[in-house]
Image 1 (cartoon, rainbow, N blue to C red):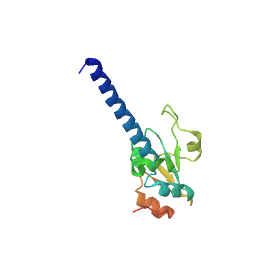
Image 2: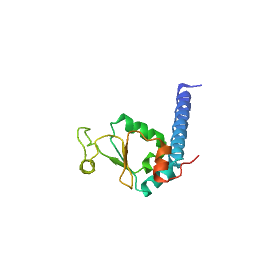
Image 3: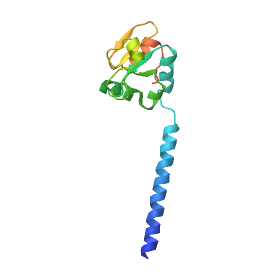
Image 4: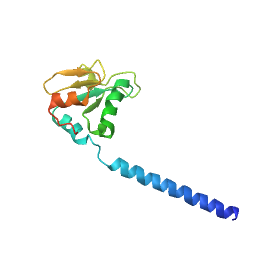
Length: 127
């Protein structure tokens, strides 16, 4: 086999791998998350989740929601440089992250188990 033929085969295989991976990624990202309805319900029930992108506990909270995190009632409190707090969170008097605020005005600070959020809001947690 010539050097040119081998190069063509390698490029073809590489292209197929890239196309396959891209298709897998697109299909995977377009699938709904298992907690989408739960996360949307939290918002519908008046819950608000205050956090900061640099906060390790917020990352742990986000991990509990997985790909459904995008549907949570999340409010980013940190300025982009991570050095200050946005006005919306100052006005809400948020001093710790994560902070969950509920429709009745109560607050829970720290990573909240999904079961506790379900109990507090009446949202059904998928089994």
